[in-house]
Length: 139
Length: 460
Ligand code: B12
Image (cartoon, rainbow over all chains, first blue to last red; front, top):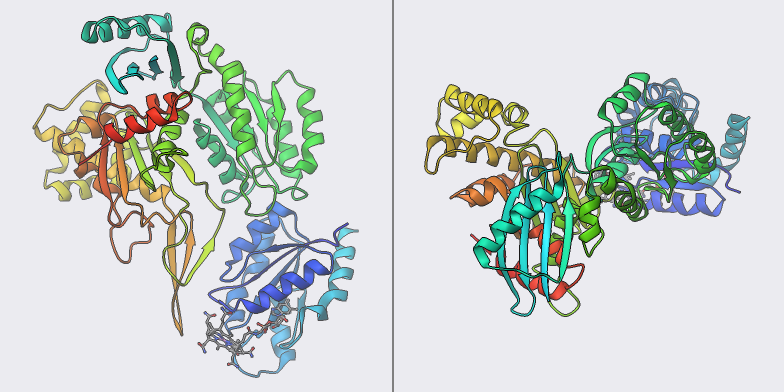
């Protein structure tokens, strides 16, 4: 039995492909049904994939520093598409340079993300969170 | 062995006589299709004309296809427009259907009524990956159950919803069949099972409903939709047989009175480096049909899309002269432009416009993204930029003294254009409209059909 369906991908014009492959592999190993959209993923693509596959969560990666701009409006579009309560998680190197993570986190939470991972967090770092949040959502 | 192929078209019934021993097409003839009275009347008339031209022709096998009585009229339903709705449309088009409309998401009451008004022969119901969304396909099954009309339903969506859909449709008197999902996993296209079911239903029910039973009774094959025969002909010419080589990747364009059909036989893999492939994969043998691009019944919408000002500049004709001809064609669809006339030049420019727009929609597109380390591309759909053969089929193209001028519409507009259209194609033409015939013949004798295609489809 799968632990849930998750859509993953690297957002915007970002082509950093290595982390994405590792995340795909790790999530499958952990028992998730993974829909991997690869790199250069638009907000619409995440949403379309989540609708067809009835996904529980969208895991957004951003490595190249433009994550904040790329992620703006994603929650609103999910709401429009009827995916209102889908989990939105983001990680990677979200902003340019070394900024205070608490501030970055607050900005992404404000955008409607449920969970924001600090730079350097490997994907395994959110396994517990993901399992609990998906279970809670299914109830 | 002597073969006769018959294509019962919407307007004309076209016969092609083939002598397998001499490896020759010995003659072709046409007559009006007579679906309103008895379809065999038109057949006999065409046969009479054929035999007047070539003498008695005692054929051993009769092979038939048909697009009479509107062809195979289908409606496709899916969930997300770019995903299962597109997969449904692709499956139906490549089964030779005329997809009148495609609907996405849960259909509204107004859309349900629109399906009733369309009164299709077949509805393809899709939605959700296996294990994915089930609400939408279930809701749409309920809607179809309430929809009046004598249509059959092919269900090819989320397998986890199949039992529920089965229960819903079983409670109606609708004929339906459930098959494999057109998109079992995200971005994985699986159209063959749905295609097969569509083909089966065409033979079992639609041939009869269209008044073609008398044809089926004397045909040696099971009647198939004409576009499917054309597609089989294209695929044979491209791929060849086990023993003989085909001509490789190709694109074919058929500009008719009501629609423009484009076929491509190519994997369409990216030809540029630095490309990310996006979206739903597309089949090697792809067909698209543009219902708003045609030389008579859809001439007005063609002119609207092609932009009359642009056409006027291109050929340096006044706008009102073009408009006058368009209006005349609209009033009298039988109208033909005289050889060498100004009207003929207008026809060619409009046909080139149809070829341009239809191929833009058929081919994939690039989106370029500038990054600090250079340009990267995202490709959606098939990259046909290195396709070397563009073939014009029948109608305006075959009858024009300048077919290459029309087919030029299929050529890429060069560096910077977002459309992955052929960059340096050679142009060919199917003068005698034999693609459908050869598609039929290939069911019996592939080698011969390929040989004749290679001989008949000539370079310009
Ligand atoms: C290789 C590389 C490239 C290659 C990428 C090749 C490819 N196709 O993959 C190339 C040369 C193309 C490239 C280009 C650029 N790069 Co670069 N690149 C790197 C480099 C050296 C390694 C990336 C990598 O593969 N890491 C290994 C993988 C396994 O780790 P990861 O990607 O971080 O992913 C892990 C985690 O982040 C985490 N994670 C990721 N997503 C998510 C999501 C969630 C929800 C969670 C929980 C966790 C998580 O889990 C992953 C697996 O463990 C990094 C520096 C570094 N050491 O990280 C810079 C780096 C990412 N690049 C950087 C930059 C600036 C660029 C460019 C903009 C500029 C340039 N210098 O050319 C361009 C951008 C191009 C574009 N449009 O995307 C910066 C980003 C700075 C920032 N964000 O502040 C970095 C950090 C280098 C630096 N220190 O300046 N790059």
